[in-house]
Amino acid sequence: MTAFVFVGMVSCKDNKENETEAMEAMEASDVAINYTVDTDASEITWKGNKPTGSHNGTIDLSSGNFAMNNGAVEAGTFVINMTTITDKDLEGEQKANLEAHLKGTAEGQEGDFFNVNKFGTAKFELTGVSESNGKTMINGNLTIKDKTNAIEFPATISEQGNSVTIKSEPFMIDRTKWGVNYGSKSIFDNLGDKFIDDDMEITVSIVANKA
Picture 1: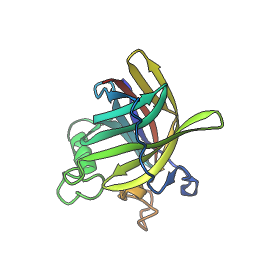
Picture 2: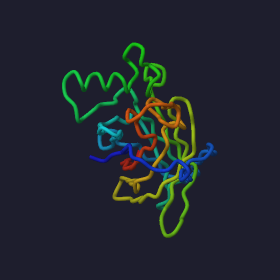
Picture 3: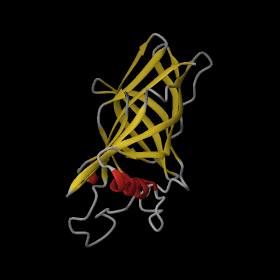
């Protein structure tokens, strides 16, 4: 199954050159061919790290589309259903408690992570495609909790029959730029070893079929 993968890991915040202010979205030409994201063949896989271990799981896509013209992406958007956050490494009560904490559905923990009752979806919108050092770079606006930052990542774009696949190399974002601050030692003092890494590694793999 393809994946849009969120993986938490440590890195230096000063190196977040792939995060900037939001840019203007791409617009498709009149001759572009539209593709609809296959939400069954695409998903989000996430992993977050902390000194005492890590957790991983999935999130579903709810919709998405791309516009292609002669093998080039001209525009694209996909929407992430944040209410589907699922943990895969725990079971029973521990699993349920972590999922409730991440979703913000546990009383008193609404704003710690994603607060899905208030922010039920996240969105990625393409703003440009370019070449750098022999690699295709995708630029776009990532919106989480109504906060939008521009990111870029290297990716392979391929067409096969009536399908298009966009698959990235791993890249990182800083979750605190989207207001996901729980357990961040850059935000809160005196956490000791009870912090969660700010940085998240993301790998994108999305399949879309000709509309």
